[in-house]
Length: 174
Picture 1: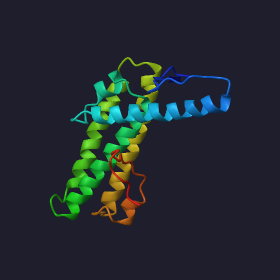
Picture 2: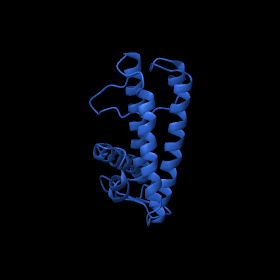
Picture 3: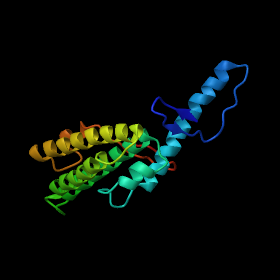
């Protein structure tokens, strides 16, 4: 497993055996670190609560790496923003982005309530980073509404940093 200064522990999927050839096992440790984070991120993604406005249990009690949880939060932010833009461009819901902003504001309220709880140092650091990302995401959505962005094909959307999870059996778009 790998551990950081705050005592977060991310297990390796497979153990790494050290030996006399340092370059070999250091490379294997690096691979194990990436695989461990991938595994944590995948499990975190599939465990994300259906009602994403209440993520307390998922954030505080799940066995997931903090960076995996932040990654998954950004994946869902991207997904919901694109659904909102698609709903606007298809004429399905002209207020989809405002509803998306309200949803993310509800998430933020829940995150702030979590910060008021008794937290470990690791949980407090996670929540601080999550709140910063949530506030920034709301600001980006506000800017998209202000710019009257109504499609995922518009430049104001395409210039945003977006996160996606590509299933293992899929081929990434080129």
